[in-house]
Length: 98
Image 1 (cartoon, one colour):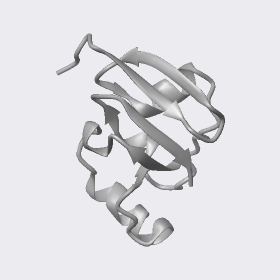
Image 2: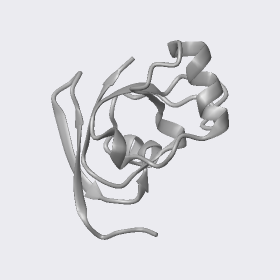
Image 3: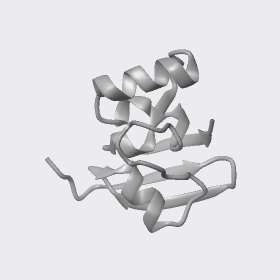
Image 4: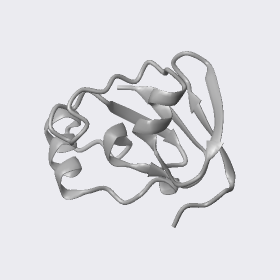
């Protein structure tokens, strides 16, 4: 279910804070605001969009099985790691490049 609530996403590496609508895919938000989060395959296969969620991880959609497998390989199972192409944002978050 998509919400109309406003949320903020802080891209800590570059000091960018954007305001958007809750329930949107993080990948779509990164594209819209031209952030430095790179996208490759957009399907949890390459890991290009790996980010570290520094605040608000509980505001993301649940991790998928394919995402968990890639995070285990690329980030040694880091619980703060997520793939921007695989999660939706349902509340305010902060993140950094991995």
